[in-house]
Image 1 (cartoon, one colour):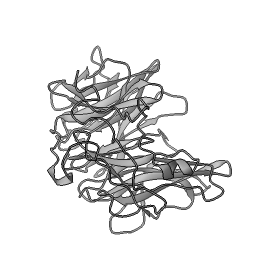
Image 2 (image 1 turned 180 degrees about the vertical axis):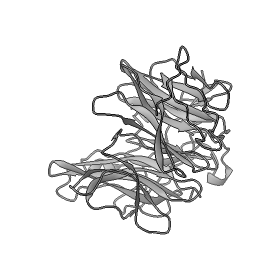
Image 3 (image 1 turned 60 degrees about the horizontal axis):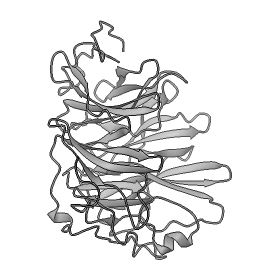
Length: 379
């Protein structure tokens, strides 16, 4: 696994000064925590209640945890990830990358269902709340639609105090599938952006929606480029509040890629050309100082995906971590110190997390999990 020399990368990442791989160096300079039944880590006993046909989100405490203002905060060295314990079940797990201690936040168990999968999650900037997408917590109104769809939930870091953020989704008569995923907090923690997709007429249409993070309002559409049928994977610049979106499946003459939507409402700016790199279906992430955007892409169709960074000041893309034969860089997360990067690698269908410390010379790259089923880290 080859990393790259990047002069003047970022003020906080400037120590990426040597090339290395998992086993040796290179001179190439091309570009048992809780078990889900204790400590309130289970899903709500009555998830989804109150969603109803009115479209108003339901508020559903998942345990004895206090209100949103009373929640504890995750430490800066703690990240969350998804552990796939079965084909259709994932746990939300926390790990401290310094101590390596792990614990389960939620197994997504409910009633007679052993668990569900997770379709994206995020941590609020004050690190007190977690939002995630899952089919957990269907209400009777959800079931009455006869159409499966995920819901966006918010909970505290103990897996309690569940709040449903999205309403019951119904078909408009032509929609046969609905897909809701990839929630992300705004920098002030007041809103959550997520992807809402409808499948009709043989194709998907995906657009970002905003919803209040406390469930106090119904979602609102984010205006985007109508020349592209898929606009999503939203990520906020933590400093400026600008929203990054990925455009794909676009009409001729409307380039795909990563676009920045300024907070002031001015026209979106293309940062990464989707024709020069094959962007993966993974959400990009900003560095904490907002100076860089990490994302994964294939250098060419069929080639293993690599990790890249877009440098805001220099307005250019640089490869950070190159995929090798049979090893794919799935996605990555940047710690609040902008020094530690956690990367998910996939090999032979197995996924593990790796910790990359770019604040030492030479940089270090070591396994964080070795269970073959862990991926999708978030800070």
